Length: 433
Image (cartoon, rainbow, N blue to C red; front, side):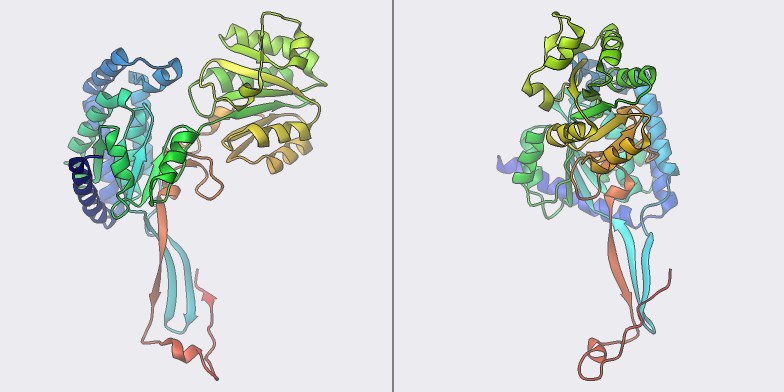
């Protein structure tokens, strides 16, 4: 790592930290006004943004799944702008009184939500993530340093330029948003523990692990999505097939797309022929385990290997396996899943209850598509990513995942000695809210 890169990152870190502190004390109205200015700027510069993205797409030599994430058409940009406007409408996450407790007369403890500080977000070649991340960061009073995939460099550069221009019409300093443009800067970013308060890496498990092993900064991991649908023995087959199609085909590159479909063996003979035919008609490559392959008797369909159960295809590919019971399905998911989003398709309420209690994942769904696992669809306005870790925040991370809290104690000259020793005074510990 060159000294010049490190010095440049130190300067960026200092600027972002200073701007973030100024942002944190602005009113709700001032932050909402800044978000609206960003939306207006994005609308104004739509043509330039789409042109930059077109240039990225023409130069890209990447897998189809990554290309789908990279491409930013007019509809996706419009949806992103709508998401920005939705964030402005959300309740202010800063200054929320979580605890107000009387410890004793005139000794009042408060726990109040506040910004994290400065976020460092490293994400894949997905330019629309810039829009979501920045709007959430400003709403929650945080500065943000962005590093997108190299394939989206021109798109991200134009987006950040537009966002900064929009912020000039608000009380928020444009320096609250920074963009890194080279891979070499990632290592320097991970060393900015004096200026960056949270790192959010969005990528493979190996990349998230690399980040965790090379920084002192807390890490909120957004890793791969190996997601399952389990088709139980009591199920509406027509509805189950429609859900499987949506979960795979609607956006196969998404981390919440289904990668493995597990089918109860009692319903396999009835479900598999129609389901596989529907998937293939939708352009999906199907891989079958031995048991399901035997039922269909189609030698043209590829057999699934052990590696398939641990693969995030991010493409129009799905593996199908048979299970003898609900318990076997749960065990398979807990072994091979990535703790992202898992679903059960069943008319048996008890089976659904057991599944949703026993499956270890950030999201567990009953009789609906896995594609609903999304911050916008959850009403968060947008998301900075989907966390698969056990500690909160978990699942789609919106505003609530970007704030922390502080304890404030108001007194009138009290000292601890009064409440200690041989005849200590008692605390009242009375909640006021």
